[in-house]
Image (cartoon, rainbow, N blue to C red):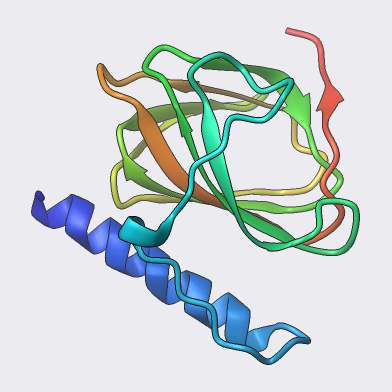
Length: 144
C-alpha cells in the first residue's frame, strides 16, 4: 500500500471514530476493511458499491464508504446538507459553476449545501471514498 493510500485510510478510520464519538449515541465505531460488507443497492449505478457506517439518510447526518468504477460521472446535482469527502484511492474531478478541482488519494473536499456539483472518477482505477452529509440526505438534479 502506498504511503498516501495508507495515510488516507488511517485518516478515514480516525474521522469515523471521531464522528462516532461526537454523535448522540456516544458509542465508538470502528470499521476495518476485513469486516466491511460492500453492497450494491437497487438503483445504484452499475459497478458501484457502498457501506453505510452511521446515520440514517432521512434524518440529520449520514456517513458511508463508497466506490465507483473508473470513468463514472455523477450528473450535476446538489444536496440540502453540507458534504465532506475523503478520497481513499483513485482520482476525482469536482466541478462547480466557477471551478474544476481534482481530488487525489488522501485528499479532502468540502462541498457547501446547495452548491451545484458535477463529479467524476477520472483515474484508471476505481474511486473509493468516505462521504459525510451533516443533514438529511437528498439529491436534486441540476442542469449541465
